[in-house]
Structures are given as C-alpha cells and as structure tokens.
Amino acid sequence: MVKITDTTDYSRFVGPDGEDEGIWLEYLEAHLVTHPAGQVKETHVHNPPQDHIVVMRSGRMRWTVEGESVDCGPGDVIVTASGTPHSYTVIGDEDARVICVEAPKSPKPES
Image (cartoon, rainbow, N blue to C red; front, side, top):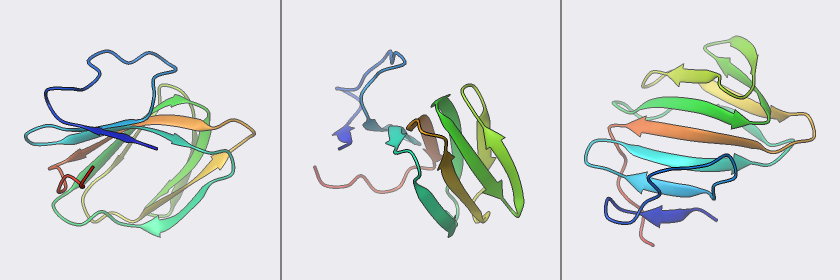
C-alpha cells in the first residue's frame, strides 16, 4: 500500500529500503513504488501533458518505449514523454523498487 502525503509530511531522505510513498508537490508528483517479481504492465500512455520519469532503485525491469526494449537495473533512468507508448516487465526473482516522477502532477487521490 502506498502512503499518500503532501508537502508537509513526506520523507525528505529515502534509503534503499524506504517504504512506498506518493508525494504531491505544486507541479509534480513522486512515488516510491515496489513492483513485484514477474509483474507485467501492458503498453499504455500517460495523458498529455504528463511526462513520466522512472529511476531504478533495485531489481531488474525490461522497459519497452515506442517499441524499443531495454533491460534496466539500479541507477538506470527511463523517460517517457507525454503520450509515448510504453510497457514493462519485472524480470528475475527480485521485486523492482523505483522512484516514479510525473509532471505536471495528476489530481491527488483521496486518502
């Protein structure tokens, strides 16, 4: 479960084992997300004008962006501009932990 926070109550420093968390700032949102081993997300797009940046923290994922596939691991960054088709698969036996940044932010969900 992701903890939803605002600008007054978010983790300012996140270690490698930090919990999943969503942060909505004035112009962007950031999520610490764990994707379970074997998870597959079919091809999708983020609605304009939302751009999507993912920073791999741990685990391995195969990202496909506009038909090009790349296996990614800790430290890799995946960028998908607004409206760009992309998908992913968590590869290996380890969960994948990522930082996902979206800008401009989407509406904040109810807690």
